Image (tube, rainbow, N blue to C red; front, side, top):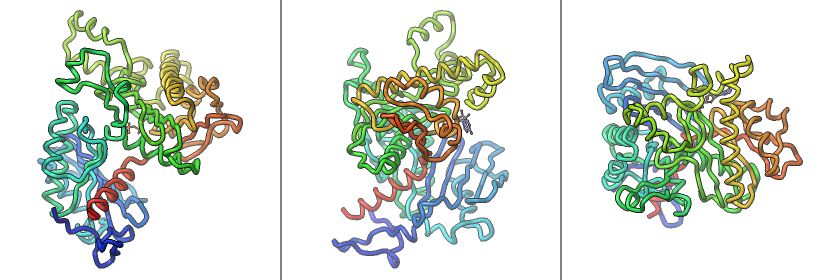
Length: 428
Ligand code: ADP
């Protein structure tokens, strides 16, 4: 396949005579397509800075709208016609190239597109350049992520239409976890379910776990290949990973993003028999699915009908016992995973907290870290209270296992992966 890629005049030639992409002049677009939405972010490779971002919502309805924001400016919102993802992308591109509010003169400045793809099953352990074969494999994974993968594919097809001859790269949420050994990813259920349906643990948030693991290595000034890390991505969805030398040993999500930690509205680990029990009480499979995915987690137990950690902390502070217990449950489960992973790794060079809660919620971090003294991690209360969305070590100097807060940036990771994959493909 031939791509018109990167600015040849301004690019340089490597020792083999191949024209290399030039970080100084190139722009990469990141696309995250959902079933009725399309999020986009344009990055400048010179600075790895975001130039503009936006989202088309309610695609395929009469009330589609476009939210758009240039870096450092406030959001604008307008009603648009977007009957499909192709139209939505065309509207996004119109904004990006608009003489008044745009950030590029022409779409030719976009030299590659990186796509967030939720499920890559066992097909993908790395990001890949999109080909017809790759699209077929993404489609095959739709069984495992019926809400996400078909929409992710719509985003790819839209880009292929709008950006002719521009390489598309698929970056999978599951890929980073593909290094897990069979004894970590197999469920102890009849082997035939794995053989027939590939039912196993896959794990999610891989792009975020990989980003913060590398950032932790940079902060510790040690190669990632030499480190044992426990990374806790805590947002509306939450997962933990045990990472040994840059390779995932285990992670808390599974076949789907439902198990593991207590989340905003997802239950995390429960006794699977609860499902049979509720079914026998007359609930349908769909009702149980909704209950466990959308009405459980913090939302289910904090007594205030909100899956938000900030609301939960506020309610607890005002004396709501159910909210206080929800935070204790969240911390107890998280500490359980951290302790288990510490044992499996044989120690840890750092425990990393990221995601909306990990980066910003000092009370949630305190509840977790207060349970970690046995593994050499003690909270520095002042540093914890002072840390919101910035990189910091929030454990005491005497801690043998430091606790780091590291802001994640999944879009930037997708940009870096896209650049790497396209550059590598040009060397071949
Ligand atoms: P998503 O998984 O949807 O990307 P986020 O990573 O944005 O979610 O995380 C959302 C969670 O982060 C919510 O529970 C929210 O309460 C929490 N959060 C975000 N900002 C803060 C803050 N400043 N203080 C405390 N919690 C916060």
